[in-house]
Length: 286
Length: 264
Image (cartoon, rainbow over all chains, first blue to last red; front, side, top):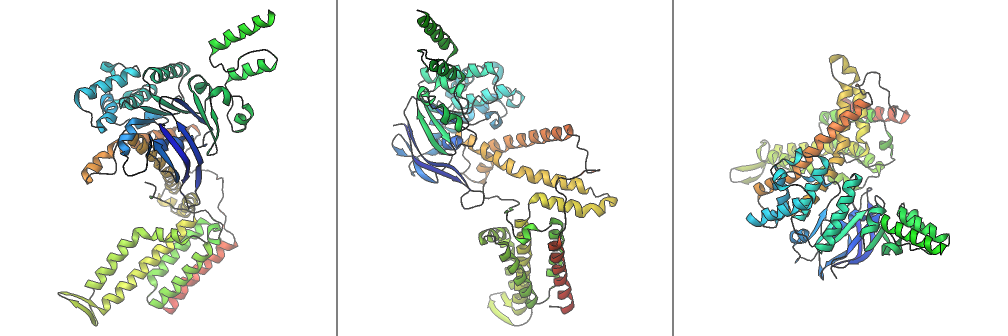
């Protein structure tokens, strides 16, 4: 087992009038190489959860195990762990600080002790991944870039650490549709070709339906549903009750299905849906 | 980062909580004057028991009270030690090489310490029970008479309100940036002081950038809503003194007068 969360509870500011129970008794596990979707409404505890996975937050009670080692035992080197399980925060464009894009992207690997040739190679890899030309961008100031470019630099800064797992906290927030589609496709490739475990936090069902192999659904600090997207989307009422919903396509397919047509409902891309509807119509006629 | 609680207001519903902020500010001023008029230990005892009673009525946890005292603990300690060692006069109690502790030193040392502790206690009690926004409103009102002399009361209050409003926001932001850099392997916890200071750069640069960005956005938002200072501005919550406030004001004034007249 890669990541194991056992009975995790997290309370912010305990013992004050401002106490908040962010997570209550959450247990889950993630296998190496999986693509996980963590979904929930704003304030449902999903961001709190992912910050536990690389030791940025300490559980109030419960345990996190990484490859059979307790994360909060004294033996764990947290800084090393954080380069293996990388976390990209929401609006990462606000974390840039260096004089040049190169230095900013190099910050992560440099903290791991990478220098010289390899460092340059990693920065090159990171920038190429986010499709920023190395020569044009590496010597520019990150503060002179546009919002979208800054976010890509931040993403490059995470990838240059060559992480085994990458946690993305609402990475597509306020992205335009084209960049979003593009970004999701790249993530998919990173997962499939780079064999990177991806943990994708979002409240956008459309984002996650196509990509995730398994979903964890959170509501008010509890893990309420888990399973494959197609299974989860069967519980439309539960999802709507906790402020989420199901993807438009799934909704459509389910509605057609309820009209008595034989049609698959576990379809998440427009192309597949098109094909399936045509197929089902032909069958109906024939 | 979390331990830095500025403006540590604790919501509640006690008499002190419900009082008008202007009255609380004036009362605080009167009580501070009283503290400096007091000349005897008996005076401090009476004053102290008054504050103690008020504190009990607020039902605030003791923890917060001591937390409020913590920052001045060192100053109190230094005052005490300096007086013990360097104020001379009266009987000599302890002689240790060239250093002596004398009667006047002990007397003055404990006297000053008590005054300091009571001063801080009273102030902490008021700040614990008054929301920062109410405070700023109170200050704006109290500065009104000085407008003729060119004191921009409204602007001062607005600056205070904005500053206070953004403390939690910036702390949250700082916390987030700190975590984001830690996720990239930044180290804020080890090394000597110079190393640590240098390691703060990845935290401070984005924090400043974001503070300026926020300031800019706020200025635009205020201008978009035609903000033009205090002239003719009405307020959402009009401050209103109630009987409770007059009783409070009378009580503290009575205390001051009593102290002056009896000379305790």
